[in-house]
Length: 144
Length: 132
Image 1 (cartoon, each protein chain N blue to C red):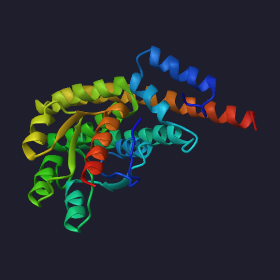
Image 2: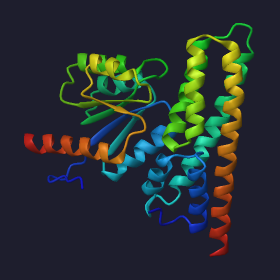
Image 3: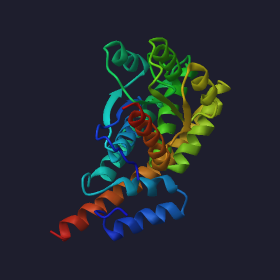
Image 4: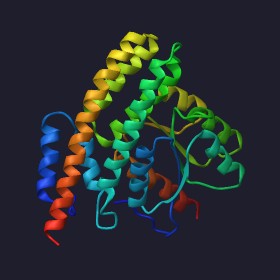
């Protein structure tokens, strides 16, 4: 088990799991954290949130162009699909899968609509991740 | 439990352009005491081999800038690197055919499970020990 994470933080993660925001992959990440790498989960979550935010910014720019390059759009979505699958951000991953279908169809409207959905689910999970990390930090400060 | 009776670590090359995936796969490889090289795309991976570097196992993503995973696998095999275990890794359901046609040994769907990686690392260790 993630020995270095506080019980309250694990409880927060459990609620994200029960609402379907995260899947079992996140639990597997918690198991990868050990004494030799106590900041592993913090680092991976931070990386996911930063990369994801950058990707959504790029997608907005790409779909704003007069002539959309759907292959480039798909490349960005694919990156977010990969990272969300890796951290267990299930709803983000599912939104990416839907997005890729619209990229294949070269449907700008479909892509724009799905980008809206992706934005909502991404900021939902990243907001909760950040709250979880803040809780973890507060607990760590309190036990010093 | 992955065992290495003869002490030398497994040399792994991770070919991946997504930072989150590189981070997690590196952590998993460290669990098995692997020496890890990282390439951010297929061309960097091929360059490692062109520079004479040797690896026991390559974990390779499919879609990357500059050179894709399957293209890199084909080029690595064309260099005569037939002993290295090459594992194609992708979230794309259609990636398996591309990787296997290129000469990969195994395809694993992303995200990779620790147990799956452990089994492959053990296979590599067994092969290394058999050659000694």
